[in-house]
Length: 273
Length: 293
Image (cartoon, rainbow over all chains, first blue to last red; front, side, top):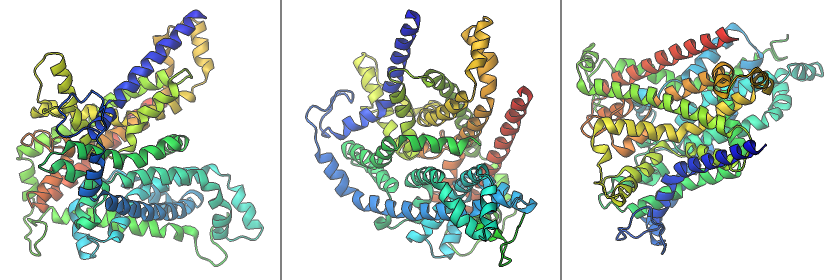
């Protein structure tokens, strides 16, 4: 019994060391964000007199407020498309299993392997032709499309676990296939929908490659683009840069801490069949 | 089973929007990328010439391409190895309840919420030469500060570590889910038979964990081979071109070199590598998992 108790203590100690390791970069970031540029003390020493001006500078010079708004708009509309189009597509792909539909599902899941950068050049060319550069709808459609396969994959896996007696019973009662989907299956998808919203939402919030090319107007800058300006800026105002990093990292991190259970569930849904 | 609705329209039309989006924004560009890779297009002018396989010939004689290819493999395989080993260790430690367990899980998974570009910038505060947090420790210990990212080979490995630590939480969660699927009775029976912890790990836990390992290895490998944000934030491919991955090289060739045709060829090559390596590794691990069950 005593040995078991000792083991518990060793485990707690190991956990604390791991926590310290993983929290280091964030501690340093917050520390830098609270120190004046002229403060040359070690980055490990806490900022005893917090210098909040860095946060004001970050918001003003980087126009972060605007960037955050742009990002929210893009995330909102992309996620809507990903959820609606994804759930719709998953229904025939999991219920009406024909050879053709199996091929289509394999194709959709295969798209997950296409790296964004592999098609950067031709996609840019296409977007210029479609006049989608520097328009919110352009980046929304592209971001949504790239997150669609994961959504279809997760919804398909989930619908397969719902007994098909359920929709068949509904159809015997006079529902059409479409009504069976919208009235019976759709309400069952709540938990998967939450997972899809979280995964694709965080993914698009953090996206960078496409935004870099498709949103060139400063007014359309998103958070990842805005952050870059702080680090490529010649003044090297690390205080403001760290403050900006903290501001844009905060929303997904807070969301994660509040909705932990769903995030973990989502991570499992996306990986385990 | 009734396959058509009353109106005679197949429910298959429900996947039409998805197929259209994927065709327009993924399949079509992929195909038109093949076409562009045979041209000398510079990325903005309206005229270009077909130059046959010249871009591909150039690629196989380009030192920069070979460096990027080698680094891409290191980013992919290195991160995957680290993530798998550390991820399994974390999962074994944090599987059962004890004080600190929940907090550790939350903190380990937290960096996965952050854009890898921003994680790169945050890590830059640690590895920076001038006043970086690691050099602050070196100075405090009375040692000379080191310019960590000035040596390309070392920079590549530092980037591997940053990437692995950022996403190790995802691996950990998949492994914990896998561990929960292993009945306690297996381990109990073995320990009654006198198997030590390491023996149980080697002959019971790890083999039964193989399906979970397969999933996370494939996901991590693809993620590592695509690596882009952290490199851009910490070295932008430098010094020189020594830490480029294929992804950052594509960006560089297009953005700074205005060589869209060549950039497209490298893009297609990256796609092929990811498809081939991903498939091989998945088949290998799945066969192994089947052999056990």
